[in-house]
Image 1: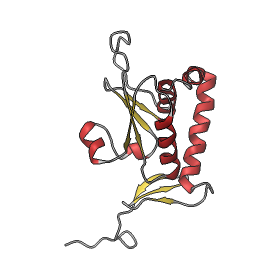
Image 2 (image 1 turned 45 degrees about the vertical axis):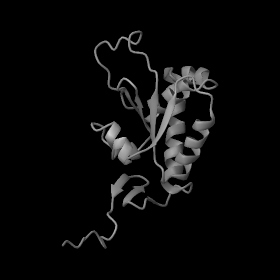
Image 3 (image 1 turned 135 degrees about the vertical axis):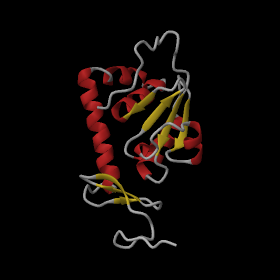
Length: 165
């Protein structure tokens, strides 16, 4: 699990989380299904659902590594907190009224292992659209290869050779 960047003393009492932005892959069927599910849930903390890599995401978060937001869900808090991987899923569940107790259970060491397993299962499904073998290709040239991860294969480049000019 990736560590969430923190400062020496964020003082959570003084800097509460009042909103979260969930960056999701708009070309992934699983991701858009989860986006729609999140939009229907009663929220204790408002969620803004934003396509990863979009112009709006780049404008709102200019210092964020936007190519990394396609690897796994990324959530940005209103005070600049960045949550990735399992921590992102847990904080999103924490924002939902009916899922907050589950988020608390998943934030324990044992629960985090369970949550990580669920995240990896989703990545496996997403990578091969459920078969675990085939690549998931996006129209913009990004390809998810199971066992390797995300690579960029620009459209119009046959065999890795692109024409210029």
